Length: 227
Picture (cartoon, rainbow, N blue to C red):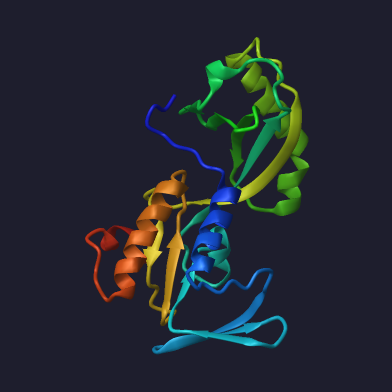
């Protein structure tokens, strides 16, 4: 149980950040696929699926494991992970409010409450990223996660509502990759791999903000590529 941990609604946070910056002049190109990026020392040019171009002095990639599609280094290990969420609990579950649980077993499990009175349980990672194989295990993994919940909360009336799987990355030292890559001029990467995405995202914001001012952050070497 974590007394100092934190959780967020990632969907609402992302939209609130975009809305806030849009008011300050940020242009947002929603649902726009980028087919090609041309990198130069003085800027980048992006070609969209519709044939239009976007030009910028810098580009910042915050695309997680999908960065492996363009970076050919073997810098991250990709895995499959699973999660389930229960139906909204009608009775009082205030005793679980703001609970953040993470065990140290192998494979690990984590659990948290949601703002709409649900329990979310995840874990049961697998050492592969094949989407078809991953999804074929959804029933098996949801059963295991449900049984684990029953073990630690035997009196909780859990009824599964949704189950899903996804891909995430682990690095050799548990740290993210933030900063420039030698093969991509005018580009920066903020890749918060590991289990501390909120913390790493804040660190990434601070580091890249300094880099854009041609300043070096004191932590930059800890997160650089090919470290």
